[in-house]
Image 1 (tube, rainbow, N blue to C red):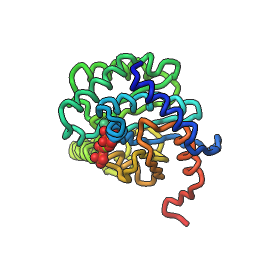
Image 2: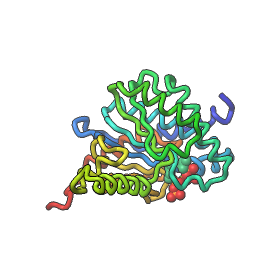
Image 3: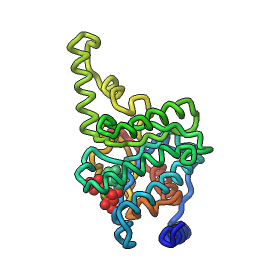
Image 4: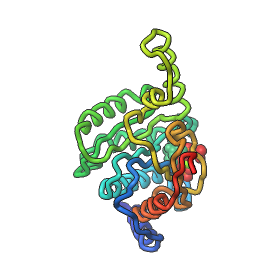
Length: 256
Ligand code: IPE
Ligand code: IPE
Ligand code: MG
């Protein structure tokens, strides 16, 4: 551990000690939570670190939050790791993110060790490097029969891209007579998250209040929770506050 990492770990402990906490109702845990893991770059900049250091710190947070979600019984966690728009960033940063993801998937046993977690990657993987695509297949195959929480990692994912792809599949099947009609249920089944339960809660740290092309179709009736804390400083306490807030909401789905 470098001195910088040591100070980072101490700082995170302090954030954890002083962060607001909340009680959650264990009988009403959301089955599916989406997280836009944002703020890695700003977190690093404030500490005079490289943006890639922020991404590494963010990856550690993902380990902790995956652990916590498993503990409280969240069945599906969908995390935004790289958007279809993130290719606009400098090549150096894109490479650092891709290498970090490859490193994590390669050390998957360490990453998900003991977590009994099923890993899936959602998004257009054809644009990823061959070695990363192969690693993704390997990890998905290796973890597919696990019974713990499912971790969907959104990688080169875009909500609009997902909808356009689904529309193309639906149009083709309608054209060749495989289906007679396109309805919402069928369209939902064409999403990457097709068989997953509804995304009940979407969390975005770092102070931004937008979807940035995350789960556009799936979020129609999701609840949202925002925090000013950047993702690398996010802790299980933030999760408790988010879930507790979600549990107080009155979800009407257009009814009274
Ligand atoms: C989120 O953190 C991670 C990715 C988009 C890959 P950012 O890198 O967007 O961090 P900020 O928003 O610049 O602080
Ligand atoms: C969304 O964050 C993508 C991820 C967190 C992976 P961005 O940082 O790319 O979103 P904008 O640019 O602030 O909308
Ligand atoms: Mg950002």
